[in-house]
Image (cartoon, rainbow, N blue to C red):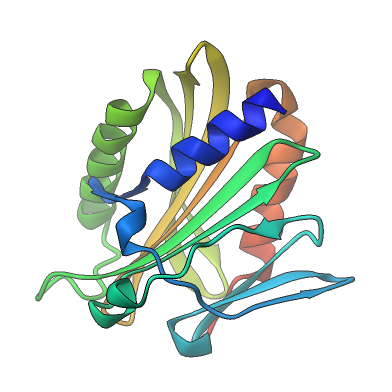
Length: 194
């Protein structure tokens, strides 16, 4: 449980989005529906949806100010597995609306890696690839890092969509790689872009 408290505190403190760090003062909730099939998450007025396993708990604090500037951050935890999923949407800069080129993804990866290094120690990128989920091109970056002596594995899924950058950050204890990979697969398999 100590690991879960630490990882939740870290996830609440910041979420990495293309190198920018969002504090919890810019958090707003989006619709979440829990059923026996899982926890459904809707972003961008339902234009992007995904499903997390049913055991995930929505821990997103609400903040109307963030909604007014277009930023949305959601936080979900799975206490039994000590896993955290942070999801954010941030408006893109003008001219960068939907660029999924290799060059754009490499810039996003560099920014995200820089952001991770401000939050963790011993950050090591272990893989970077482009995947297709929901018919949309997504940057996937896997990393290993350490926080307060605990080894953590993480996956970032980043893509621009509808003039926003969408980032899904999955964090798990390093000893639970199979569970981590299964969670990332569930997220990718259930992503739907409208």
